[in-house]
Amino acid sequence: MFVVLVVSAVLIALYVLKENYEYWKKRGVPGPKPKFIVGNLGQSFLMKKSPFEVFTDIYNQYPDTPIVGVYRSSTPSLIIRDPDFIREITGKSFDHFHENDLRIEKEIDPLIGRNPFFLRGQEWKTVRAQLTPAFTSGKMKLVYPHLEDTSQRISKFIDSQPNATNGQGYEAKELCKRYTLNNVASCAFGLEGKCFEEDNSEFQQIAQQFMTPETWSTVKIFLMSLFPFLTNFISVKFTAKSVEEKVTNIVSQTLRYRERNNVVRNDYLHILMQLKETSKDYDFTDVDVTAHAAGFIADGYESSSVVMSFLLYELANNPDVQSKLRQEIDESFAKHSNTMPYEAIQDMTYLDAVLSESLRMHPPTFAVAKRCTKRFTYMPNNTDVISRPVVIEEGTPIIFPSYGLQHDPQYFDDPERFRPERFIGANKDKIKKYTFMPFGEGPRTCLGQRFGVLQIKIGVVYILKNYQLLVNKKTQRPLKYNPMYFLTSPVGGLWIDFKKIK
Ligand code: HEM
Image (tube, rainbow, N blue to C red; front, side, top):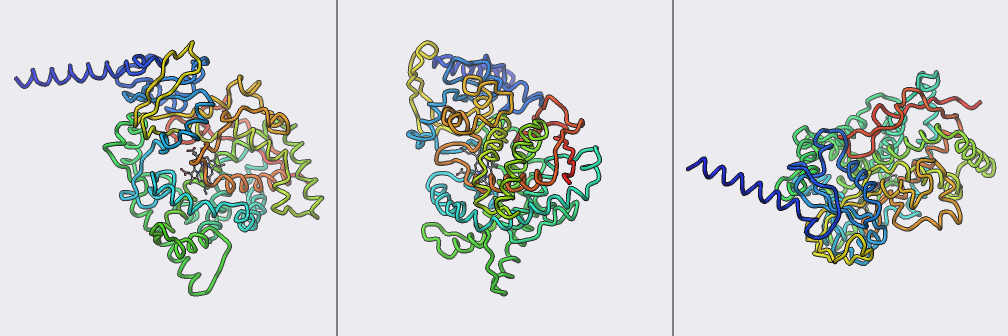
């Protein structure tokens, strides 16, 4: 009897799974044939490519369809290829798609769970509105001296690393991580990170631990990326309790010191303390202050260092662009009596174009994932491929394939060529909206974009002022990406030679 029950249950499960794999076909949405259990993520199960890299391949395989139906293991998900539909999802129909497709609950993980990225509904709205004023251009101007100070110290660090200057090369992300973490320590925690002076300073250790979940949590996150339905059943605690305590201690010690000594410093921690005192609609506690300062580690350090390291690599790889940018930098220094005021950085159009082009070629994530929060009916306009309206059910994961769009020759001529001119003047105006979205789009767009861009620009200015960059042969080309890392991370690293400019 028991055997019969087990066999029946297995047969029913197999039938349901098989039916499930007909989901998009029944709705008339094209897409690659799924394989049993793994869906379209076979390569991710074999740890060859991350799920988002697989979706980029699928984006390229379906050039004529506005949406592609895929299966993340057994979960039907939708890749949005049509930029106009992305516009609709992030704009007019945002209330149908307002959540990110990754869940970390603040009740389980009080620090990461309070990051706006993971908040939902009204709570997200309130916190987002509270934090937004911390990132205005006025506030950026206030933190700029801290960023410039760290930038000016990069060359002392490079000079202290024999391999950086003797032809052995220095890994760009390692350099950029030290730089951006010093900025986070200074701007968000009011501390000296000592990331240039020490190889493994206390702050570096804490940041590293903060960004490295415990093994069991890593396994859970990996499983959730393969089986999205698990997000409804399992919860993740990203930060270990011991790390949480360390971060909380740093923040409370700094705050106590400031209170006792009447120290007012123009930084993010000060803004957070002011929020705690003035917040009305939301009970902004000490945990919130710590969580948002810690959010800088998660958001400000890792993503910015990825972007900055690719930018250094592209400059080394494109000597003409590098010379032109150095000329702009030198002229700006000359114009401002050998200083680099905040306004001067804003005026550098070529620097801005070079960063945009690097972000186009190397966005820090292959895709951005959302979740349908309210049933939505997609009305096709390309009747050849999709002939009838498609109902998108609540809970369906939605994927914006940023990398695919940004490398699509339909939108970017000769897309594998590094050509900053695309982002200058009339060329820039011609770029189709919603095809270039390294910071996301709509109300949930990156909150720290201004900070990220500013710290990268000023850092690159001081590096190019002092060094000529060359690609070291240790860089493995063509670039391949680590399938297990959530951001684009080239296997073997990006190695640069820094030749001092006399
Ligand atoms: C160049 C560096 C950076 C890049 C490329 C980047 C990119 C992104 C992207 C693609 C998103 C998702 C947007 C979406 O869902 O539509 C995002 C969200 C976010 N980013 Fe960034 N980011 C960067 C730096 C930063 C920095 C420095 C901070 C803060 C200090 C930050 C804070 C955030 C936050 C809080 C969110 C969640 C916003 C929300 O859901 O309301 N980011 N970022």
